[in-house]
Length: 79
Image 1 (cartoon, rainbow, N blue to C red):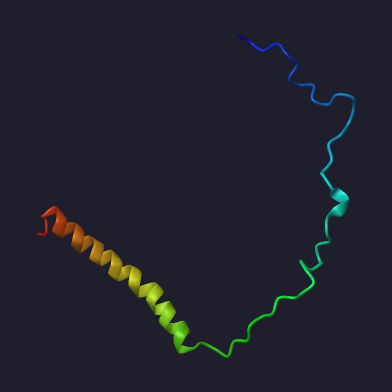
Image 2 (image 1 turned 180 degrees about the horizontal axis):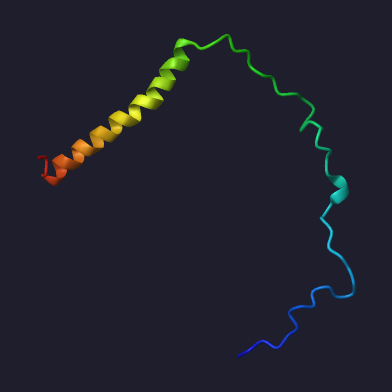
């Protein structure tokens, strides 16, 4: 069955769409709340930062190698 309605006449009565609550928007330069976020002071890179970065780099490499080795062992095609 074919639709016989007029699909092109969306503007009935000449009314225009406008955004909901357009007058209630906050200006772009205003803050989100009554308090400013406090920026933590950084003295420089510490041992903890280096340790976390090293773990984020090294752990996935070891996990990938371990997954490949376990896959070979379980499949029986080690060599």
